[in-house]
Length: 308
Image (cartoon, rainbow, N blue to C red):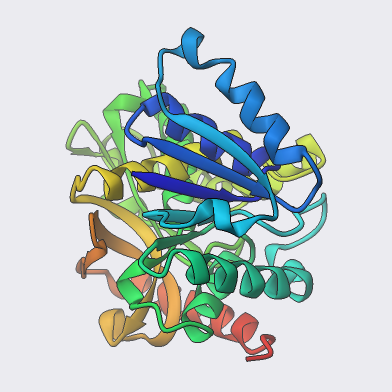
């Protein structure tokens, strides 16, 4: 199992670290355009191998895509990160060109790879990957929903004053501050609806805090977060590499599911060795359907800025 991570910045390096620590991949290739940067990150990570007990080989490459040849899974974190006050959508002009070039280079050397898109605006970058390649839709996956759901569960556990292992919940919709749809109605604590424990008002606050989870961290850190995004990616990669058939909300190309067409947006999917093995259509309330439709309109508006 060979995994490539394009972009050796904070998010990319965290992806490589978490994938290596889980020890399911034989090799992780870290690639960056900055001279020596990926090689340095790879060497630093390899020097943790004996301490962290993994045998995954991590190699670095300065823009040499031949080193990524025959990758089973490729993760794209390339592009500029958000700065305080920026929306994900404002990154589109620069990041679209970068992602388009990266996808083409990856496909040239690994035509059968499953692509995971992390670069923002993530739903639109996932759509771009679909529209500029002949890769089957099951092999192009946007990461956002997995991260948003992790942030939702963090906020739920905080509100419930419960261990996070007791909490389950999911965020669908676009990976944007306005587009996320935290499914508070379906969130549970050890199978019991969270509405049994906290008020509707508190749940609304959880939802609002979840939606600005990335912006909150960007304001605190001065740049985008990296630990949780890296962990979210590693969860998706492991589900695919180990054929786990796990359900994650991911940005996927829809053709009628949830009443949506010609769009990549976050919905629950089953992940296995073929990438997206199934789109799971859950029954939404009228209010949830309306929020998802509104989110889709926002994503389509951003997609319209692409020069396809």
